[in-house]
Length: 168
Image (tube, rainbow, N blue to C red):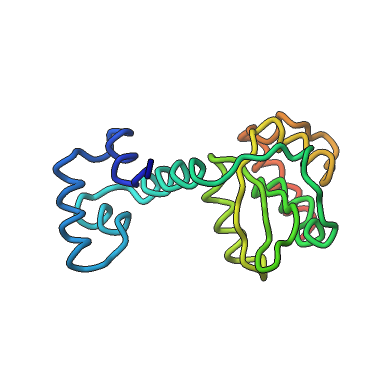
């Protein structure tokens, strides 16, 4: 079953059925992406579109257990320990044309921005459960004081930003 962005925005209470139909009509004429039209026509917050898109992507990509994967040292070398924790990304391996990288659904928008701005390869994301991704980050990108639970700790960003400020 196809999971459409409009359905997710209805499900989350951001749009109603009539608004989605209005966006579809405009999309048919303009060819613009649904999310952009939702923002422009209905005043939807871009963060809501991004969250719905991450939910959509997470449902169509596969979920991995990082401890069952084979890691490529070249892939792991693409990000620093700080980047891995800050953006909650775990490079796994290269396929013939892309880099497979793991993250969580809630961290996907941030991970995508990171990959687009920093990684010099096409990236596709797979999902991991937060506790499993956190444990794998501890294994591959150990930072003193961080545990698998740190992955979802909001204070982690403040800690990493403070550490970056001292290093500068």
